Image (cartoon, rainbow, N blue to C red; front, side, top):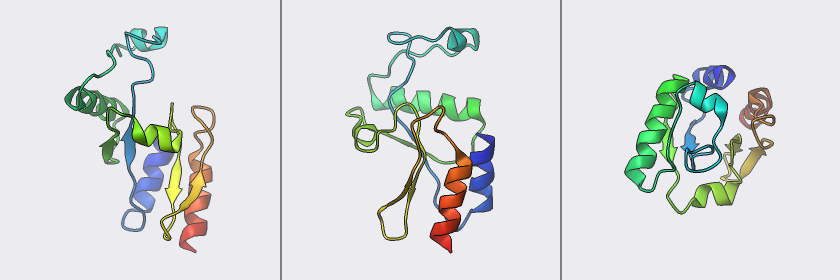
Length: 123
């Protein structure tokens, strides 16, 4: 998150940054990753908004992010509309349209590309 946090700090007051917490990618009752278990991350897939909010709060704490977090609903409408699984960067332009859509993460999660798109949008 380091590069993204730097962008957030650099553009405070110019760009509204949000993390949208969507469906848990590797729940204990789904596609479990050994690395998650080793790191003490063991979450069941949330079945209520309260559970999803608790998972998002744990994620924010673990990532040590100051970027505000929004929750996708249990219907996963945001993830479906934006193809956000497992993670993806977007910039919504001043005109309300998508100005930048990053590639699918984790390999397509490239904050430097978002930085370029922000500079272009603000120019």
